[in-house]
Length: 566
Image 1 (cartoon, rainbow, N blue to C red):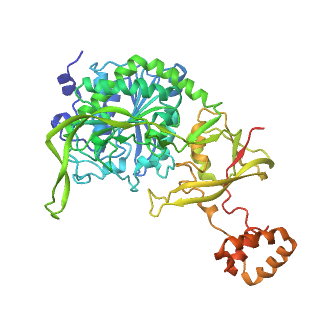
Image 2 (cartoon, rainbow, N blue to C red; image 1 turned 90 degrees about the vertical axis):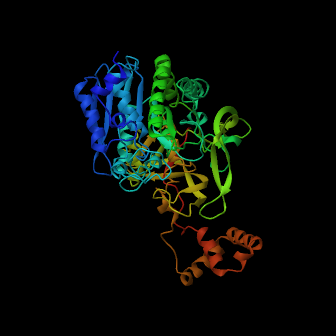
Image 3 (spheres, rainbow, N blue to C red; image 1 turned 135 degrees about the vertical axis):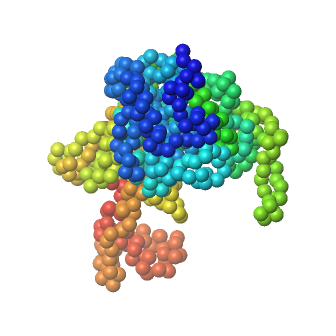
């Protein structure tokens, strides 16, 4: 086995030659992996779509058997590990750790399962990586220079996995569906409270992951990861999600919805993780802890790799016939685990700027304490699986997004009449300020009706007999927190397109009410209960319009239809 010194001499990295203080620029990162691919037959580097920067997204593959074909990997039941780096280029730890990690595998320093396939994105957010300096993360302790969180269009790519507004996001979706990984790691750096831990970890929320993978993650894989890191002298805790209180009072597990990388991956029954090193630790420590986490994963995958492949295959297959799907899980504070937290005592002292009290952590007063970790999410909205969804062809952004994510669908061969469930948007709340280019909807309420609807040749039928049924439900059911409706893809249905001239419609409305005495009675009852309605002639005219055949049926009518089971 080659020594670490020999590895450095053979394929040195800037991280090593700078004594752990620097990270390379974009061209040097890609050049390093290209050199490994040129010198080792087990490595291949590919271009996998474009990014908003105008530069391609690179993917590095490691395959001892040199097939470099995910379809064959899955046919042969080989484990697929996918590592994504530089989604936030101000957090480059994983970039350097991956360079070291792959090199040391190739030089024999790290032993990995013979049939393991590894895919690495060297830098996902290329635009942010090119936007390089020393000041974009004011609180971070190194490296000397690093990139910026926003991509070339100033999107935070770790909010883009469902909506895919960016070329990066679109390329990633296609890449992910090509790989279909069993294990996914997306490397990060955390801010927030100060504590002794160098590494914290977001494991995807096990209740949302569900199935046997969720159980394995909670009961076996997570404990093994924490134990392995402790043995490597990097004791780890779950991501310190304690923004509104002191960490020693405990915290909730971070809920990784589908907009985030790990939450997106979980929708496809993938064990997914976001390691978060701590910003205040030295860059050298942070990279070494990320490398140690990769080693810990290797230990677990060496022992459980075949089992993970089997469980993932079974869980994915089970989605085909799964009858109910949960949306919008909520924290269950009645249950918790106790975890060992290594913190620093916090307190207040006068601010040198304002003279007012400010928070500080006293590193001369470290402590170890068992704290409550709330990692159970329950009480979701339950959605019954339909036979299929039908999407009119006009909604091509939705169709294209589904197709990029591997959803199988067929175009109707002729005009057709179908009995379907129709959703009507009853109420929702909209964020007052934009979030990643959208005004997100939340607390979405719907009403349902059953109707015969005419569909046209070329409209799309999405059958619900797929391994990725969970993703389909998550994005097409409008009540979902990360549904396409929540992300404003259907906002045109929320605005009336037709109307009336009041002085003309008055006569039509009066004649209509005379022909509908039961409706006239209903209006009088509403007026007796609603003084504002009773005192407003225009409001009463609007009420009649809304209860008449002239009201436009497209308003608030969700244009994705459910074909129910008979």
